[in-house]
Image 1 (cartoon, rainbow, N blue to C red):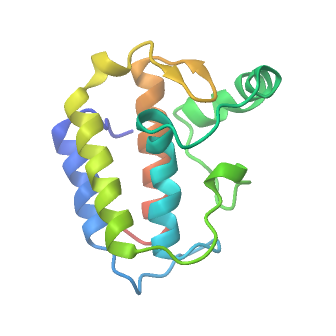
Image 2 (tube, rainbow, N blue to C red):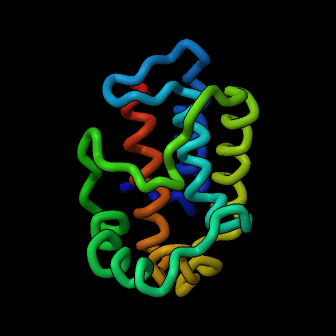
Length: 150
């Protein structure tokens, strides 16, 4: 798995993002490319912004128990997985704005580095190691860039 905290790997993700255009079509799923960028941005919004409410204690317990390992493991996501409600993007989005936000989040994450994320509290899963954070970010992004053929 690529390491989102390494400049070379981060640059590879950015190069893949830059290969997409407004007319890029997904190989599976229902999202348009602008929705996919907005969808991928949600993972970073949960780290850097305070626009998504944190789950209640019970819901967080369920997420940690039943979902966390699927999200932070090395195992790739399968196609057409169920999407958490806060990650569902309805309607059209501004392609360039979402693309630029995603690139900015990637650069910020890479520049902050592994040490910033080691033991950092996740919105939904509690404290994660830097490896788990990397898996969460890199696996999700790779899944959706692959979905759009890059």
